[in-house]
Image 1 (cartoon, rainbow, N blue to C red):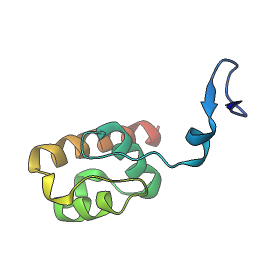
Image 2 (cartoon, rainbow, N blue to C red; image 1 turned 90 degrees about the horizontal axis):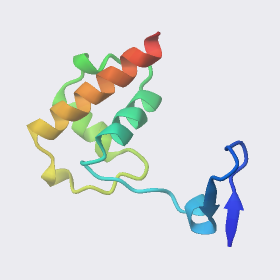
Image 3 (cartoon, helix red, strand yellow; image 1 turned 180 degrees about the vertical axis):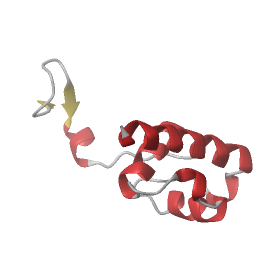
Length: 92
């Protein structure tokens, strides 16, 4: 069964599963993580957050399914930069 999502432009169709099952993501979903962190911590400047705290916050995000042991400094840095960009965009 296919549904048209309310509030979306015509032509965007979603299945029942897409409407009811939360989307999962892992460490490679840098933009999704950045958006989720900005949503959860709107007043936090990402450049002030320690990697240990950011790692914890990411693993606690709804839908995050990545293995906490597979993160590394490069991934956290990429997420921090994407989060910072999202943060700046929302600041105006």
